[in-house]
Image (cartoon, rainbow, N blue to C red; front, top):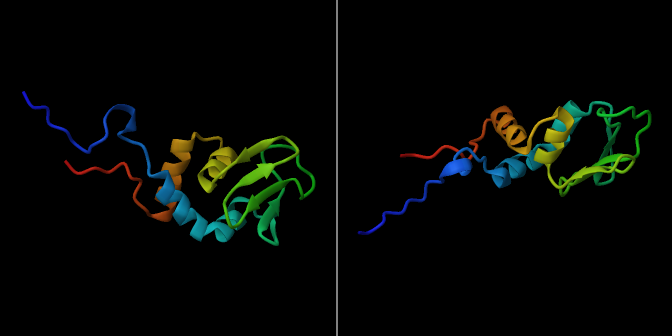
Length: 117
């Protein structure tokens, strides 16, 4: 008996968004998105510097997002991430998957979870 294989994901990966594609699309629009997400921030060189809305942050300086790479961190509380999806998840208290799906919807892009039969 020959077993038929398929390229369709199975199990928990069926609804996994395409994080790479979503992050790339977000990176292209990152400065504008950051102005919406963190309106009191400002660009300083290659970084967007803002107050962290997840804690009592009174001064700019420790919460920074790299505009070239998307890496971000708040060095006052050791919160950090490597891409815009993780930043959106952090800011909104979402899982990585939820954040990716919401960003895909906001930006009008496919999620990578749509598979034809």
